[in-house]
Image (cartoon, rainbow, N blue to C red):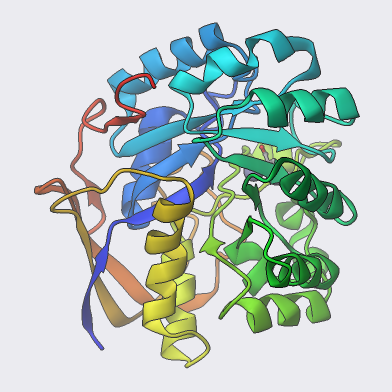
Length: 356
Ligand code: DOR
Ligand code: ZN
Ligand code: ZN
């Protein structure tokens, strides 16, 4: 298993920080990081400043994106109680809707039933609803999926109790799906002692038993691996009030390929989790003539230096992994070659391509 060809990976959970956080990441650097990590299509989160909760905010972000993205990008609309009348009008420009049920970075939060009802009634049925839901909020999301008979996707599930609840909901036939992140699979709460604020994110890192439960459910209950690439500068992370979040686009595939090498994960399952299922669940377009060339046996040690992400650090620095991304081809064009991003800003496609 040395030279592997994988399909272009899809990350349904990245934070590209435009507008308002361009010192952390922007469309050009975030999509360069995506290509360096083997991702050719990514979905950007709406917890920007201002948030992507109105048609105007989405139009402005899409305008900037059209000129600067290097891979294909869709944007989430963000549910906001103060912008509810604008919600349905956001849909033609959005890949999906994001609802934040718990506290995290940014101002988007929904904790009232009228807003939840409006989201589930007004958001078009052909577009997915994704949720940041932790602990009993997962039960809220499952209840909404049942009440409105429409799919709900749970972001970054991290605890045993949550994945077991989702397994029960799936057993009952409810239309729920979920993703887990590499950091919740490869780090646990003990890493906080070593990494301090560099290991702080939402959801926080779990106990070893939570991590074990995620690995147990990777073969069935879990639908996708998503990075939750959430860059912040080192100065921000070491400040008195560090924001939660870690970068993830450039380390996800090497970490998962290492699990394949160790016999913890089948390669066919990795492809389902990082390509096939994300595309089906979010109804994303196919990317013809698109693939990733990997040297699956190349061992290397993850370093902060040389990252494409503007933040320039990773909580996985110092870890030795097996699996190096050599080349990425997108729609027949060589876009990444041995450490060099070749795709120019503006060469990626926006999803949806036409407003519908
Ligand atoms: O750790 C996190 N960071 N979790 C989130 O839900 C948001 C993200 C961010 O935007 O920084
Ligand atoms: Zn989140
Ligand atoms: Zn996130």
